[in-house]
Image (cartoon, rainbow, N blue to C red):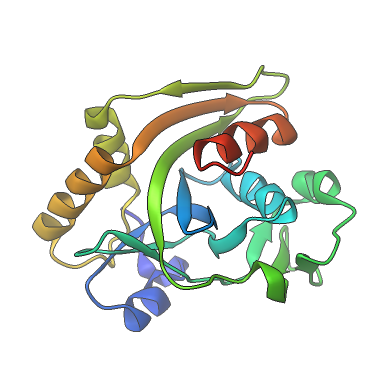
Length: 200
């Protein structure tokens, strides 16, 4: 579990009580959302940024907020934190992403007005990405048990009532399609993810 002192989880928890907080990026299309769950360096932020550029709405980066009762994704659209290697992949920026001045080794990128969340979204797919240079894009189903194990590992320490969070995540993986994604090209990865929620 990750500590709230290093992450935006405490701010998210203050905003939405009764939530499960997951280390994930998230985007949605017509009310259907995809969670890109993983630790730093897996490529989730870069894929999410590309999805936003392609027209999806941006719901979260680094901290996805899931309502524990309804399992809906709650918008928490703080600026994305993009690393130098990914910045060049996302240029030209267009109007849906607005880059800021670099801070340390990350560039903050805010969603444009057209990319902001619109209400809550149903989580239709959960993807665990893994970037590997020169890898062919491979989206594969993963078991519900594996997905639940991974999500529990990626839950923030700020999430209260761990037993309740376990039950909520168990329900979530039963409802959503669950996948692993190995990729070396962000455009191929974004296309594969888009198809999961009908935006490809």
